[in-house]
Structures are given as structure tokens and as C-alpha cells.
Length: 229
Length: 229
DNA sequence: AATCCTAAATGAACGGCATTCATTTAGTGG
DNA sequence: CCACTAAATGAATGCCGTTCATTTAGGATT
Image (cartoon, rainbow over all chains, first blue to last red; front, side):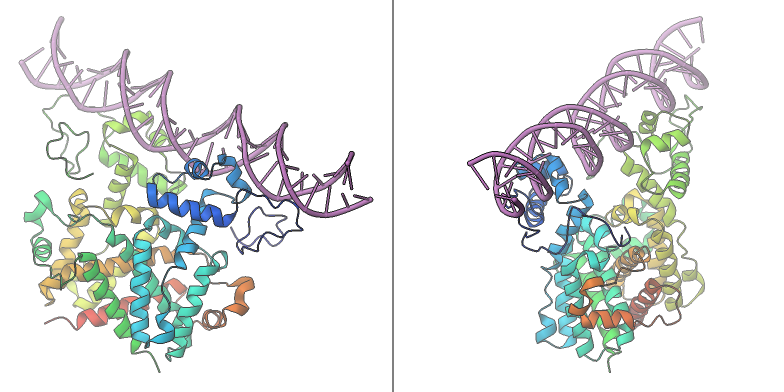
């Protein structure tokens, strides 16, 4: 949905002003923060298959239709959850550590958060930052860190996007089944790949997904680090 | 669904043997190839929102329930489509060009194919290769190319997975709205990021997504290239 | 204190969805 | 010609997100 300059009285707002309006009815059972918290808890308990508007309403002791006074759609709820989760991503290292360590710490944290919420990746990957203030705050912290480290300004956004793309893809990878690369009955016809799978070096990591993530992340850190002034 | 060792008479098979069984009824209106082709055409015309089992059946002049004689679920159809699309990814450069050029050509082709089919990424990213023979064939071609180029065997799979993760994430990026990084009213509170967006260098590319993809891909090619013997 | 206004909750509907199943159809091997 | 069976049908199921006319209840206005 692009912009809508003068939409009159939209049912929901992103910035959680503490319910002023003019002051009329203060006894609302529901609000966006409550919905977000309940959604997060429901997803944790039932997963994304069990996350329905009806189930969400049930945990809030409310009729499903009541949710639509605070949220325009189920997708809206997912956006709220996504933005909350992004606030859990650790950007603190950008204030305290050298650039490469900060990127490493941020990237692992980012991947870990969303590997438990891969269905949100389709939402976050194409969501305008204006609709997700906490996500925007993360970008601010990261780009400030890049700037401070002498990263050329014209490439900051591209570098962040490249890292983020890698992070999202790697988050899926975490959830892949352990036997994803078993060739099964086709092993004879794929000798190179089958051998590569059999001899994969785990490099001390517990999960293959961690090895691949480390490999790609270090590649980017090394190459991007060389761009700094 | 994990393995099912002795499932009796499963309704569908991946390898398209030319309809033998014993030889009874040869006049089937439907088969997996026809379903795949029709699905691909329907998706092209109506997108993934318009892709329903009912709509698919309609294009085949068949009742929706008839599809279930050849396919166990809608997800199964998506797997068939995904595997077909993967066969469109260009791996030919691995036979004809040096490693770095081959990786570059393969990665751009892979991203271009799936940027038009991002809803399939959730499927392909966690799908066992045994369920997708053409996808397995792609892995074979790529890992053979890595092997021939002197890439250490223990890291071939991890390197491919890292590249693939980046490719999947980047495919989403292609579909992002042009104004995704507009901070809107929050611009004053995010000066570093807002400036980085304003001064982003497009480096001659038509799309910001291409700049980021190039940046990340070249980083990986450079770092992985150094691992070769 | 009585009235008005309005945000927010309700419950019944709607259309669409994937999927199931009892039944019918139509070729083929015996 | 018969028996068998894969494949097609069409009705039914249950769930989903969402809409809407209606009711409720608390602060504002007088």
C-alpha cells in the first residue's frame, strides 16, 4: 500500500502514543501492544500454522472481529510482531567494538532471531521501513556504525542490504531438515555432490547451517572491510 | 514429512516414468508434467495469489479433486514447479569458463529465476534434494565445477549453501518497493541512515537490488576464490 | 445529573480455500 | 465378455480472514 496521503481516521497507528485522542473511552480491552504480545506468545506456543486471527482473539478473550478495530489485517499483526522482534536484534556492539566484530555480532544475532520466525521473512524483506519504526532504528544504529568506521557513504545501504539478504537466506537454512542433502537413490548419478556432502567439514560447529553462515559472513566482512577509508 | 519407509501405493512419484504400472488405463487426462506446466502458466498469468487448486483444475478442465490423484497437496504442486524452475538456472558456465566467471553467471541466473517466484523460496530452502531431482542435478553441476577448480572438498557444500542463502535473500530484495527505505516522518531521528539512503551510489546499475547483489556476490567470489588450491 | 458522542466489542454472516470421500466412468488384460 | 482398477466426478467438510449492522459503556458537554 503506497502512502495514502490523506486517509481519514485509519484504524491503527504504528507509534504507540499512550492513548490520548481527546480522552473519551479509556477502558479499551485491546491495543496494539497487547495484540503484539499475545501474538508473540501464541506463535511461540502454536507456531505459525496455529497462528490464526480466531486463535489470537481467543487468547485475548475477545471476538475475532474486535481485532479489526486495532489492526487492518492479519498481515498487520505480522508486521507488528516483526518490528518487535527486530528490536531484539543486538546492535550494541556498534557502540563498543571495532567494525568487524560489531558486524559479526549483529549478523549472528539477527539470524538467530529470525531463524525462529522464518514466515516473517516474506514480510520484513519487502516492508517499507516507515511502517516499522524499530526496524528503522536498527538500520540507524548499523549505518552509524558503518559511517564511524570509515565506510564510504555511497555503499553503506548496499552493504547492509547484501548482509541482510544473506542473513535472511541463512535463517531459512537453520530450519532445514538434517537430511536435506541426502541424494537417496540418485547418489550414483551425482558423484561429485554426494562426495562433497559426505566429506563436508563441520569445522567444530554443531550445525552445518552455522558453518555456511560463518563462511559467507566472514567473506563479506573481509571484502567489505577492505572498502573502509 | 520424514521418509515413510513403506508407504503403500503413494499417489505420486517424482521420477516421471512414462506411465507403465502394468499397462491398464492409458487415457489419463492428467499427469504431473501437465499439472506442472499448467501451474506455471497459471502463476504467470495470475500470480501466486491467484494460484489455487480450483483455478488450476479449471485451466485443465477438470474437477479440483481430480488433481489429488496425481499430487498429494498444493505444496506438492509447488515442489514440482520449483524443481522445474531450477532446471532453468544456467549452470553451463561451469563447463566452459573459469571458476569465478562460472559462479557469477550461475548466481545471477539463479537469482533472476527465483526473484519472479519468491513464494517458492520457503519451499525450496528446506526441501530435501531427493524430492527435487532437477535441483539435485544443479547441485551436481555446481559442485563438480567447484571440485574441478581446486576447491577444498570439505567446504564445497558450505560454500554453495552460503551462496544460495545470499541468492534467496537477494531474490526477495528484487521485489521490494522502490520507496522501501524512505524514513518518512522519522527522517530527523535517523540522520545517519537517511543520509546513507540519500547518497547511495548506484554504480551504473538500474536497480538498487542489483548493486547490493553485485557487492555481496563479488565479496563471496573473492573470499571463496582464495580458498582454492 | 441527564444527554450525547464515539471508540470499541459483539455475533452472525460471507466467500474462498484445501482437502476428503463415496460414487461413477472407461479403458485393458485375462 | 468380464473383472479390475486408475482416474474423474461432485457433494460435503471444516477452517480461514474479513465485513458489517448492531450493541455497549464510559468520558465530555451542558
